[in-house]
Amino acid sequence: MILVLYLRPIEESADDQAVRKAARLLQAGGVVAFPTETVYGLGACFNQPKAVRKIFLAKGRPLDNPLIAHIAMKQQLSLLVREWPPLAERLTDAFWPGPLTIVVPGLTGLPEEVTAGLDTIAVRMPNHKLALALISATDCPLVAPSANRSGRPSPTTAAHVCKDLGKSIDALLDGGDATLGLESTVVGVSAHRIVIYRPGAVTEEMLRRIDSSVEIVYQANSTETPASPGMKYAHYAPDAKVYLMMANATARTPELVENLSRSGEAVGVLAFDDTLLNIPADIVRLSLGPRNDLSFAARVLYGQMRLADQAGLTILLVEAVEEAGVGRALMNRLQKAAHKVLEE
Ligand code: TXA
Ligand code: MG
Image 1 (tube, protein in one colour):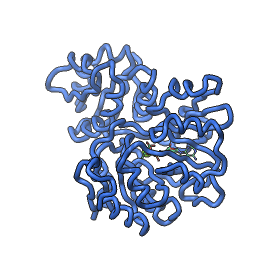
Image 2 (cartoon, helix red, strand yellow):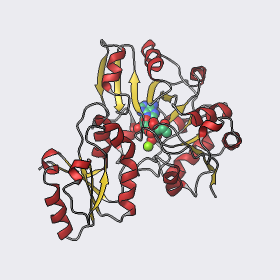
Image 3 (spheres, protein in one colour):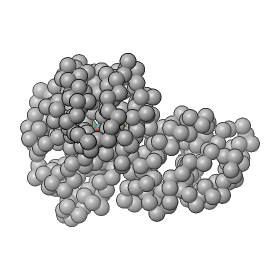
Image 4 (cartoon, helix red, strand yellow):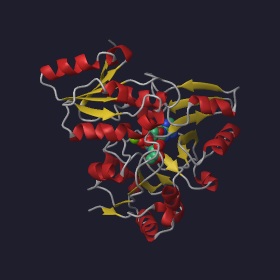
């Protein structure tokens, strides 16, 4: 059975007993869920293939989807990467610790369980005291995907992790709610080019500010053989079918709710506050917050999707957001979760 290790505010002491206990479990080949600023991760030591396999089993994750290695200090890069372009150094100077994952050529001999057989490795230094303390105490980079069952919304609270994985992991460090709520930006970096595999809180605009001469391309929605294997799977979806409403459809949300309800569906709406004002009070209304605060929407999105399931909804109408700044990451997740996109 799961051991929930941390129930006190993390400021009290980062080298708390709970962290040391979790570190010992990891060193002994266990898997431990821990908080980061993006979402909760399920960690194992990068150099213990048996432990890494437990992550895939617990999540039900396809084996051809490689993992992100989380480090606490840049010296740990030498255990993982073969080449480190100057552009990668500049990006990490600007955004680490933080929600930016960098894909570079990996050292030969990294476990196939980690790289899924690719010759690259994804690395990130999370901006979370407890995560950094855990990696340091373990004295080993931790590979960690999001700590959800594969395909489900990523966990932003310890309770979400417990619900999805409580029976199949060794421990869970509870560090409270994730502050960002969406997974990190994943980029491939070469000399003069950045490929965005997965948009996140570090936006294209922020990357461009580091060097206005680099070429930035997206490969997140590519239908070709994906260079980032995670992009080809359906993701982030609640059990309720997500109908993603583009602007014209959002304008007639009340009508959509009425029609779907009449045909016997348990309909709920996940939208900005002003859209929710027009929805009858007997309908489950889940807020994305004020329209002008996309960071708030990012923080609450996955938790609200999980509430839709707890409310027993069969269809969740979700309002599309503007694809600027972090809105691009939000729309990326919503499009992946969507069963249908309603244009009109
Ligand atoms: O915020 C995050 O990134 C969270 C926290 C726990 O750090 N982790 C996370 O991991 O979201 P995961 O496994 O759910 O997503 C990792 C993504 C996948 O889309 C995967 O395909 C991609 O990163 N990835 C991993 N290694 C890669 C590589 N070598 N090349 C390209 N993409 C890679
Ligand atoms: Mg994930």
